[in-house]
Amino acid sequence: MNNDKVKMKKTLNILKDIEIIFFDVGNVIFYDYPSQSLYYYYIYEILKDKIGITIDDFFKQRIEILKKGINDWINYWGNKELQSEWRVLNEKAWGDVLTDWENISIPIHNTFLAIQYIAKYKKLSIIANQPKKTMSLLKRFKISQYFESIFLDQVINISKPNVEMYSYVTEYHQIDPKKCLMIGDRIDNDIYPARQIGMKTLMVALPFCEKSLKCVPKEWGKKYFESINELGNQNKHLFMKDFKDIKADYYTNNLYSFFNLGNS
Picture 1 (tube, rainbow, N blue to C red):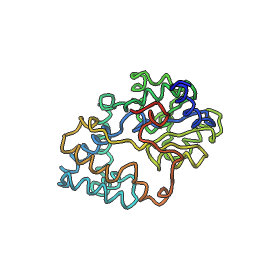
Picture 2: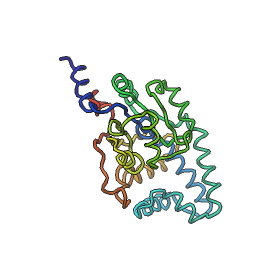
Picture 3: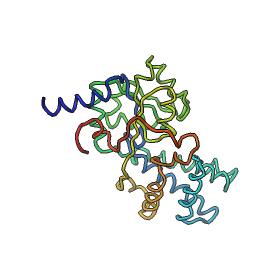
Picture 4: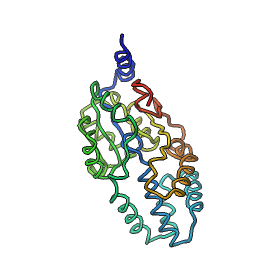
């Protein structure tokens, strides 16, 4: 049996009872680091002007609030410090990120190849909290053609981690959740709600990619990297009461390797 057939056999064995694979987008197909770091930078600039914080102050607050089990740390802090001003300033910061969305969305190395390969054998779909601009991004990179359906929260008006989003997509496909695999990078948003309705789950713990931070000043990128390495999607759920004991069925730091397609 040649190498390709061996790889195919191993891949299909993992997926033997799976009919549809659902993909998240951020840190699964495209890096989340650029948009998140840029958004944090814009918020820092606002808070620096308003309350006189330093970069170290910003990331110290991030860690301290996350360790209290408050996942939406930035809204918690922004509302506390800026009160009625926060909503408008926060929307402007995120709007500025969206303006440059297609330029800061960087594909994850070899993930497109993994998607193209798996699409030969299984139905694929996307379920993600993403702006509408992500649809054109997927088309631009010619990756949308491999997905039978794409569910973005800004389109269907249901967001993760609401389990209704997962119920919605399985009902759309008229499929038993037990025959589905959810691939995501967060326990709270992806793994926990998918498991609640019976899906199998794959957690992607993506290594940090330094080139993805070219959109922010170098010093900022360094501090951001240090902060998310200390407390990021891979471990922040450990401080959340409802999620600290939740585990995925499978773990990987590289989809290309997970599906036995070789080293990245």
